[in-house]
Image (cartoon, rainbow, N blue to C red; front, side, top):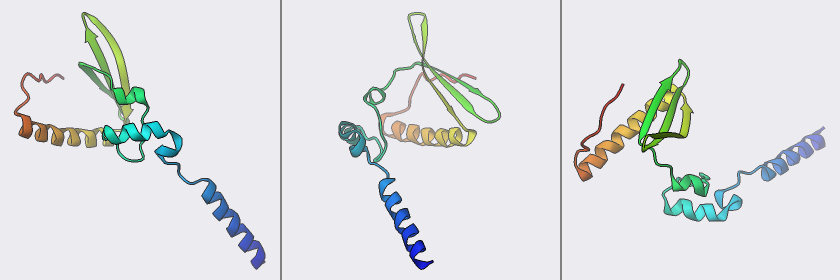
Amino acid sequence: MAKKRKKAAKKKVAKKKVLRKKSTSDIAPELSIQNKTLGVPRGLIAKEIVLAGTYFNVAYVHYTQREFILDFVSSVAGTDVLVCRSITSPQHIKALYKVLGGQIEKYEEANGEIKGASKTT
């Protein structure tokens, strides 16, 4: 009986070694270098097209009881193009709200008040 337990334990250890979490540099070394230079958190994988960013100048916020939907739109010369839609929980949107507020305060301390920002409902 003891031998069976030891064999089972060895198999578990072997599986853990195989299932180890791959790092960014294991999967895509070129992304690892870009992520370091652009301040992407360690261990986060980001594709080059995502790192380039997407411009938007209009945002729509919709919500249900269980989620918030953020639509980011590029509006140029009368043409509106949805460039990104993000869906998240109320808890995450509130955390994002707090983080953005703190970052805006830091920005304004360093660069002065942001003027011309309109508040919409």
